[in-house]
Image 1 (cartoon, helix red, strand yellow):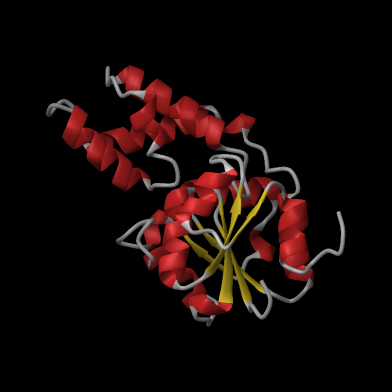
Image 2: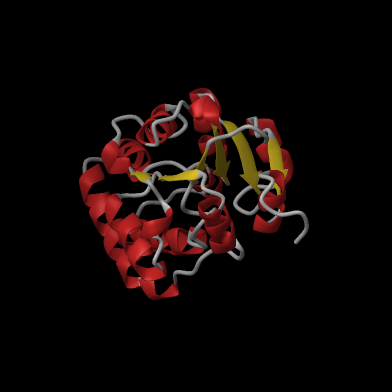
Length: 220
């Protein structure tokens, strides 16, 4: 991972320990609208935007009873009810600070809406560490499309090939790879073999390992 000028961080599952909150909000939402979706199908939602996921859910399962906009609105309401459970991934702040202290440009590139991103930045005082932010509200195509990572790199004044992306999902890795960035997959949402198969250049089991891969820590 040598010779990079920027780091592009995914948010959910990389910075925020929020996957269980998303899953709970999703469970409440599906029960609310009596939508019977199997766990196998739901597992494909990870790393995808609400627009993408709930547009598909409304079309395939909604039977005209609910629109994607309604599903997104109620998912956000359930997320807000669970906001007090939000935590950062262990070691994430150390990695973010290490990137900042090394003078490396950093962008957040997330499939979540801007309201979720801003809440996290306010809650954990992250604003000063990132020079750019891309949320689902800033793009018209979503991960695994390369647009989010191309946009994040450009906001840093860089090409994606100058950057390393840190991702936890298959769709995120594919998005970053398609944009031309090198990728580190963080085990958690998916296992190591799945991240490797998705195309990750390296896989880490912790943020301590990520910092070593980035050359920002000799040992941890």
